[in-house]
Image (cartoon, rainbow, N blue to C red; front, side, top):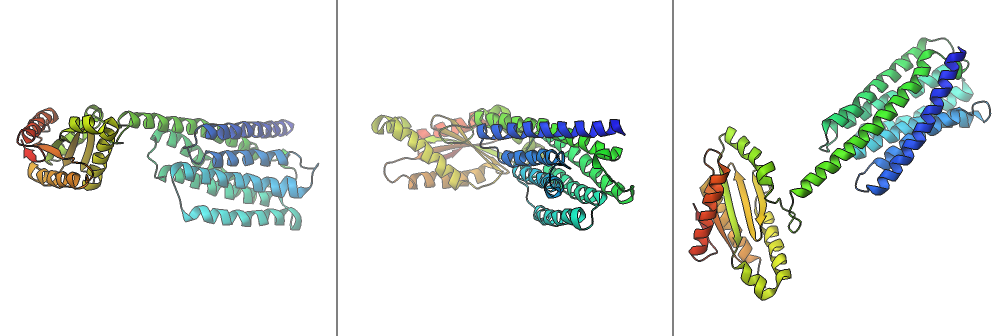
Length: 382
């Protein structure tokens, strides 16, 4: 039993130290990565999970309201903060989160009751374990069901320990209903020593997987930025290698028609020469915004700044005739949105044959050249 007492105290101390260090690390990381929401909430949760056991260590030297009621309440609050932090990180919301917050109030009342009115360590263990089990299992659910598009492996690495921990705490609560009366928690059964070990494993996996998840987000963000044009915010021509081929292949497999529109600003060099390059850049920005606002907001439309004043539009599930109608609407919209100086666009259209993007680009370019040759500000089908 002495060895078990030593194990509990050692594990308790380890959980305290790791919680404090990890919470400080999360706070500092959040200050450098302000766009990553939820880290401070997680840090508060981890800190409270460490603060609770720290207060438990003063049992017998400080009042029971501090070392029992407040200490255990802080641990439960810490797990609730973990749940809310995960909710922020994964963009997950549910009424269950608010119900658990109300349940925490009831659990704190029960802790007071089983400390002063009807003292029982077993009952306090059951209350604490049941609440932590509920919040841990809900945290795992929030990780899986969150709306953010995150890498799956670090999510599983976080969710699985929460599931295991939640089930373990449920078993601990059930055991508490039938085990002999506990008179000294530090000399309690083996399952209570395991609680600290499981808590430490949970915090370690949470720290590693959260770092992994955030790094995956940053890498994805960098990749997305490499595909975006800084002036207009549209995709750049790099998507021709990394994104569009897969979309075209998928459309071909579904035997859906795909049309390609190539368009550029008429006499753009003249705009640059007469009005200056700043107005030239503003013109490209304004044109891009007109195209965005005029095109249907659909996954079947893909708009790219191809380079300079040239844009490419892919219309999935659209044949050349339908693409012609879309291009005519775009042509009119551009002309109408420039009242301070003249700005028009020409359009060349080609329909993809057998999913061949290169041939469609060649034909659409040729059609665009014909539109220029015929006097500009018009649409031509290859």
